Structure formats: C-alpha cells, structure tokens
Length: 635
Image (cartoon, rainbow, N blue to C red):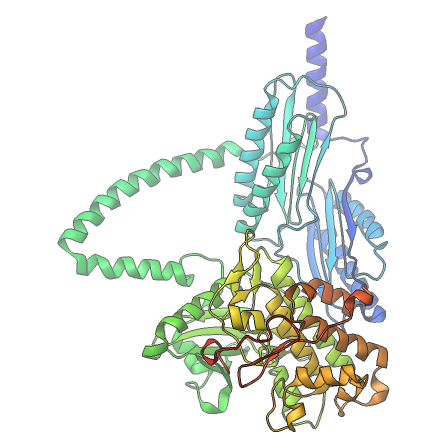
C-alpha cells in the first residue's frame, strides 16, 4: 500500500511538472507593488505619455513577451518595461500584463510605479531605469504552506540557487529553471533577469538575490525579488518540463574551463618567463598592447565605444576653431559630425607636460564613472579614444549648449519662468541620482551653470565629471584638496577640504539663484553691493524685498510670487553655512514638485560665501577663516 501511494504521488508530480498548475491563478500572487511618492508636474503631458507607453508595452509583450517603451512629450517623460516569465505562452503573458496594467493604473499621476507577479513584471518611471538591476524596493518572500521535514534541504536549496544564479546570466534570455532531489521531496528552482540588463548586470542582481533568499531556506517556499531579477524555489513544480535548463552543461563547461585555464596559465606563464629573459623587447609591446586594448574596451564588448582618433579628427574637421564649443581646465570641446550623420561633442584633453598626470587622471575618472551612469538629466558618454597625443571623450551633442550661455549671453530669447523651473527640477533630479540612486554616492564637485547643458527641448543634463569623487558607504565625508569653481564652492570644502554630497547641494543653490536672477554668482561689473550674488540676495531677503531679485527679462504674468518665493527660499537653504542645515537633493526634488511643503524649520539663516579676496562671509563659526587662492580652480 505504501509503495502504491508513493508511485501515485510521483505520477501526480510528473503531471503537474508537465502541465503546470492548471487551477492556480498566478495573478492572485502579487509579489511586489508600489507607487512613487512624487507627483507628475504636468498632468496632461504625463497622461498622454503614460497611455502611449502602456499601449506600446501591451503590444510588444503580446508578441514577444518583452517590451520597453518611452515617450517624452512635454515635461513628464515616461519610460516603461513589461516582461513575462520566459516559460509563459503569449496568452498567459498577455493575461498577466493586462492584470498588471490595471493594477498599476492605481498609481494615479505619480512619476513611477511597478508590480511583479509570479508570471510577469510591469514598471514605469519618469527616468530611464532599463539598466537598473537593484533598488530599495527589493524583497524576499518566505512562505510555509505546509509543515515539512527540512532535513538537509537548506543545503540542497542553497546549492540549486547558486547554480541557477551562475547559469542564468550566461543563457541568451537570462532564464534558468531546474530541480533537485530533496530529503523527502523534489525542490524546484527558477532564476531570470530583465532582458534590458547586460549579462554583468544580471549576474550582479542575482548575486544579491541569492544572498537575500538565504533568509527563506528553512521555509517551504522562497522568492527574492530585485528591480532587475527574480529568484524562486518551491517544493512543488511551478514551471513546465520543457522550460528546464540543462545546468550540467554550463556548470561542466565552467569547471572544464577552469582546468583549461590553469593549464594555459602554466604554459603561457613558462613561455612568458622565458620570453622576458630572452626577448623582452618582443613580448613587452605585445603584452602592453593587449592590456591597453582591454582597458579601452576592444577586448570587452561592454562599455563606451572606442573610436579611432582619425574618425574623430575628421568629424571635427581636424578640431577646427569654427567647431569649438567651449574650453575647460584640461582641454576643449568641439562639435563633430560622424560619417553616419550623427552630431556629437568631442572633448579633447590636451596633455601638456605639466598637466599630463592630472589630465590622464581626469580622463580615467570620466570614463569609469559616466560609462555606468544612465539618467535623462545626466550627459551620456558615447565613447572615447586613446590614440594620438590627446585623450578624447565623445558625448551627446546638446543643441542649446550650456545654461550660462542662455542666462548670461545674448538675451534675445530669454528663458521663460517655466523653463527655468524645469531646469531647476531636472538638474536636481540628476544630482539626486548621483547622490542617492546610483550604486555608489558620486559627488560631482563642480556643479555650475556652464556644466549644465540643454537639449533640444531645453531639458538640463549635468555634464563634466572630471572632478567627481566617490563617497564610500562607510564614510560620512572625504578630506581632499579642494577643486571646483569660485562662486559655487561650499565654504567647508574650500577652507577645510571636507567633502560631502552637501557640497553639490551648495553649488546647486547658487545655480538656482542664477536661474532666478539671470545674474552670475560673481560679477565685478556690478555695483559693489551687487557683485556677490549670495550677499545681495540675503540683503534683499532681510529687507523683505527679495522679489526684486527676479530677472527683469521674465514677464510678471509668467510666474506666481508663491512659486518664486519657494525657489528663492530653497536656494538659500541649499547655501546654508552649516552642512546639516542644507537639504539633501532628494528633499530638493520633493520641494520642487510640491510634495514637501516648506515649514518653520525651513527658514534660512544667512548663507555663507567666499569673495574674491578669499574671505568667508557668514554668521557661522567659520567667519574668521580665510580661503587660499591655490585651493580653487577659478575657471
């Protein structure tokens, strides 16, 4: 009787494995659902973009099980992604995506939302998230739907999860499913990633999911959900047998590859040793060339494009002065047109003998940082070139060039108040991404109007990461030699070299004041009481005449006094002498989109600034400190 029961259970398990759970409704199993706290700015624009994106996602998911879409009409762009689990057919996929769409529409007029079921995933945001693999919204879900004798199962589950996480990034569609025999029952596991990720992004995501799912190993069911991947095990089959991945083929290949690698190391290691002794001038250039190709992206397929110097030379007409867009501390930026017709901006770092080390360091910083940073308010790096006497960086070309040209150049077509407000918000979003949403905290160190570029729609993109620094998770600040631009540099950084992300907040506050007033942070052509923007603004604030600071080029009917006062107050908060009194950039974004009202705690004190005599002006305890000219790049 016992044997018959075992056989019956085995047959039942096989039937379920072959055909899946016919009676279970996967749409009852909503795993993760959330809406952004940030409201859209223009409801009409948002709704129009949202509807177009949803329509496109439904069509794409119905045909291929995966789709991305974006619409950027007006001030509220929408990016969307839909993906079904790779073992689902088109009807199952469409059913799941439609249910997800219905649910996500409850995120009414906010800038983002996402939902994950067991069978599908749907997400939209106001920023491009397609390469994001982890986020604070991750979770592990552990369920016990029956009492089981775990025995050695946790160890077996962990091994299965580890193998799935190794294999999925190596499979074409980032999907792997398999099963292993447990103590009393078979254990089924599945791992998959969003198809918009790179193989490396998939691997990093699943590595984190594997760590999180360990919290579930003593439960009968466990899931780990990240922004870009999904990992699950169960004691009942939840996928069909036709979708099983032959893990042994990949694991065996990996093990064989390791053995072969060691053999090659011994062979080439011996050859290298002989070569170094006998023919160093032959092998040396080959080895250096190989590592140079690795570093420049010719060996690794991911990362920015490695352009030939001659292509960029031709694109810029041999860096002709007529194509020059601007000039910084280490080189010039030129407009270039590639053979495809694509217009780009080429940053040429001139390597004079005295600047060689610093320029190369800046080049390495920009390539490493920008290659992995993707946000609609950050300038995108398209490629680089390491040939010839210069190092070249290739960026998106911005038709409207930099903000300072619009504010302080010819004023035939001055920026409207709404455009200026959008620039404040977009810039804040870009910096907030660097500080709080990227994998590590990036401090830009040189936020200023000339480093904010404007696209065809006058949307801002923060540029020039040559001075950027990473803030480790275990550090509250860095102590480093000051670098930046006088008029925008935070006093505590300029004087003491203490660098935090709030140094960027200070610089941003100065840019906001420039946007509101149309005046430079330091302008010696003005009367003495107006030469230092922060000083002049504060005196008007104390006299309750701060609206006099608004750029006279802005028509009064274009703005409300309440909105201008909000922006002015916010700028003063950003430039407070005390670092602790400055808001974070995510708080700045919340204030600008009116999700956080200003309170009595947000009344600013006198801001701190440094004049050209290198004296600190503030009511803070730093008042008597002086500022050395050598510590600032006064570009």
